[in-house]
Amino acid sequence: MSTTRFSDCTSESVLSRGRLEECRGRRRKGSSVSYLEKEACLGWALCVQEEDRIYFGALELEHKSRMAAASRARRWSLAGKTALVTGGTKGIGRAIVEELAGFGVRVHTCSRHDADLQDCLRRWNAAGEGGGAAALVTGSVCDVSVRGDREALVAAARAALGGRLDMLVNNAGQVVVGPAAETAPEEYARLMATNLESCFHLAQLAHPLLRDAAAGGGAAASVVNISSTAAFYAAPHLAVYSATKGGMNQLTRCLAAEWARDGVRVNAVAPGATRTDICDTSGVALGEETRRRLADAGAMDRVPIRRIGEPEEVAAAVVFLCMPAASYITGQVICVDGGRTLL
Ligand SMILES: NC(=O)c1ccc[n+]([C@@H]2O[C@H](COP(=O)([O-])OP(=O)(O)OC[C@H]3O[C@@H](n4cnc5c(N)ncnc54)[C@H](OP(=O)(O)O)[C@@H]3O)[C@@H](O)[C@H]2O)c1
Picture 1 (tube, rainbow, N blue to C red):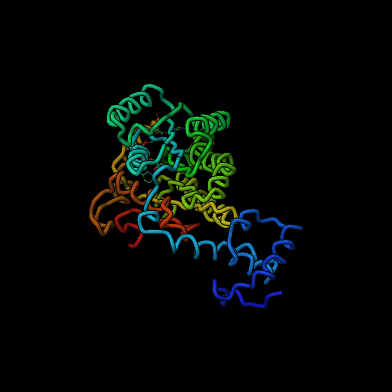
Picture 2: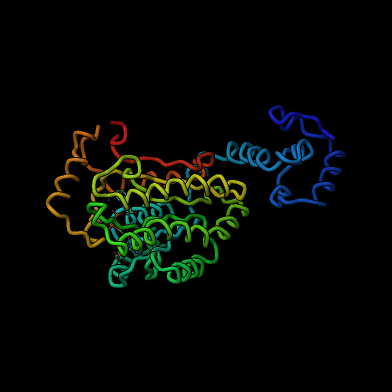
């Protein structure tokens, strides 16, 4: 069998055809990597080299042969892809839906309130009349903190998107603000279910679909979790919220490591203060002391770019991470915060 070292393995050093046939036969007996069969000689050359390194090696070579060779237009295109974006009726989620649809992605979204959802769908459809991008959006009512709702959401998305899912964006989230010592157990449980448990369970539910999309040649197959810079510093009166986002960041890294073998990338975008109505949506009434502390923590002199972020600026990072151009980026938490986490 070949003794070609992994690092030396190029298309020129691939085994002769006779040996390749031998390799094919051998792999089929105990094969665990079905998509390798689609790969050309390069993957097979590697597979006889070192049984236990075959998987990652093949993945790397696949990218070399597919992504590097893809045209610039293909690397920066999401046309014809499909996405599930939670919480798409307001703020950052709405910007993500609109940006993805603008790139020709068919998007399914959700929120807890049907009236808001129908308003958005009407507006998007009106904007898309005559074949415009926004007509690509569908939606269903779902409270992501409820397990059964999450199951129904993924089923609805699957049906609306023709059985294919390339991207999951876990955006829906809420905030609880106040002194940790005074936080009620119900508030703690609600926020964990809304921000963290939903992120894990929806990723679990979407995984088979994302894996299928990747196996079908979908370099965009990925999960993007919307985290927060609150996970990086000890923000006052945001203990539970910060913990949900810290958990989300670690989940992002663990899933990325586990699902790379399936061709599914997992990343997070962590916005800093962004112009949305998240406190209203979360039913948060800020006390005077909390308002003062938050204003202090979010003071613009701690933000090198000296202004609050806009939802569209967060959406741009999300769309980039979904692109085939980001095919070698996984397990990362990208801050979109005007530099707030630098100081
Ligand atoms: N704004 C910021 O400064 C900031 C900073 C860092 C991170 N983030 C993160 O960014 C994400 C989006 O926040 P945002 O500021 O855009 O908030 P937002 O303006 O309040 O929008 C939240 C969206 O999620 C939906 N939603 C909320 N709870 C839901 C639930 N339980 N089930 C289903 N949908 C739900 C809302 O619709 P309904 O209310 O109708 O359900 C709405 O469409 C969150 O994960 C948040 O933690 C925001």
